[in-house]
Image (tube, rainbow over all chains, first blue to last red):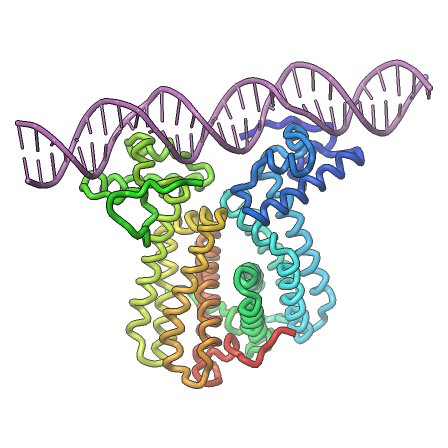
Length: 230
Length: 230
DNA sequence: TGCAAATGTGAGAGATACTCATGTTTGTGG
DNA sequence: CCACAAACATGAGTATCTCTCACATTTGCA
């Protein structure tokens, strides 16, 4: 849909969706301003109804400046998604880093879910940004990737305390736990607070039960290598 | 965004997103043709990239005819979503209708998940249509409503075999089970078949475990009325 | 058969994402 | 402090899209 303009620096376009790498202070502030305004609009009316002209006006810049930094509308959404995903990954990694036993993993997991839920409650726009991503095939991949990253972080720790269990089974279970965790949080912030609380608690109980369950290394129901679909 | 044109019949616009109620055979076929073409395009490139002109051309009709029936692009997506939701609801109701005990509920549930998964495998476009809905705030509500309907169907049966458990707790658990079931199916059809199978089996094991668990009426981990968020 | 209602049509109005030629600001070496 | 190149800013313009409307055609029925 778009051809490269090839900015001065940034030979590899690795992690950022930015078109031009802002080097001066003014422009760096501008990028933040754009993202903040886009966030507010997405939260208010959804990404579908977000107009690029509206973002530019709200940020107090011209349409042209907007496109200096973001090659298209999806890039704004993508940048926001990547930021929130990075925060989530750090949060998961930090909590799991403390763990030295299966019992501690269980505790860490309970804490993790609470932190996660608080994050969603504090920034309900995370859900709107996620919704915005779903309509675009390329952006949907980012979401899936994020569940994989979270799942991998969990599986790395989990595997240490489940010596007999095949790594593949753990990977799969961890991936599902993380993905459904995300789904649960988004559901929880979509309904009234009291019901959301109840939902998050229910999910925590269901998952945590698997960590104290019978079988080597816990997770007796999620992990069952003999289970093959009929 | 749009003002009513007020079609001849259909005083209450209850269940359909159609603008005009097609009364002749030709037009009824046309609506089906439109939906079929839209489905194919959404599956191929996503709803975002679907052009109304493209749908019209593929269906062999003019743009004007397209708008005779669907007031806007979202209405097409909405109609498709409502159709799939209706199929899912019927499928759930049919399977639950047979149940006369908690053990049977467990079996019915296992079968239900398999049927559900097969539906998603046969019609992967269900996932794309769901994705299309997420970008629009009004359409997102439909998705939530569908989880509520499925949850209600399950809760009605479940409650019969869990006399001591508060209905509210059952409602909440059933809602979450159905919603996460949907999330699981969509995840499963997004990855390779072997991994998808594994994921669905894992979710089934996790949920079914709750139906044979200790406590009155099963569901010991999902249902815990004493659990309040710290 | 003739007429009214239903349906079909596509040029075009309005709106939006994105471009590009040109003007302005910033940092820097002399 | 100046000059100059690179970075940055601008907004009218272009391409493309959704949706409308005035009019043409087809259908069912008395």
